[in-house]
Length: 161
Image 1 (cartoon, rainbow, N blue to C red):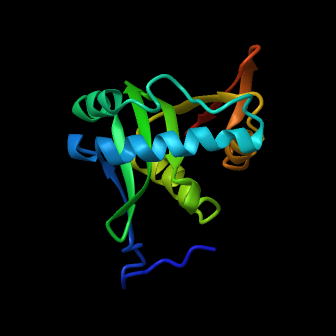
Image 2: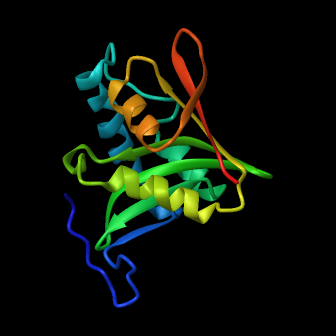
């Protein structure tokens, strides 16, 4: 269980989920590479990840186009997300947490922050590989519903009122 510093207003003071800048791209790239490469422990056929997962130029491009976010804990970057929104739909392209910070609640916190930040969104969509038991259980636990699958991915949606 992660211990959080709480202010008088009940807000978490140690965690921040905000847009990343181009100066964060190198750090987020390293975290992304380690996070996705660690998927071999949960069924990945080999180390690897989604397109651009280990490309500094990709993460820089995502930051420049306002799609890259970072999660910090007391100023230390511990995770990130790439988000694409269009009108009333948000595609959670990916979220990732540094492997040394797994199972501390960071992923849940990020997903809750995403849903709060984009409260005017009517639906959140994402996909994850079929073989990844960790992420499939995670998204289901958070209320995402499988809408389809193909040979490689399961596609999820979460509708909002």
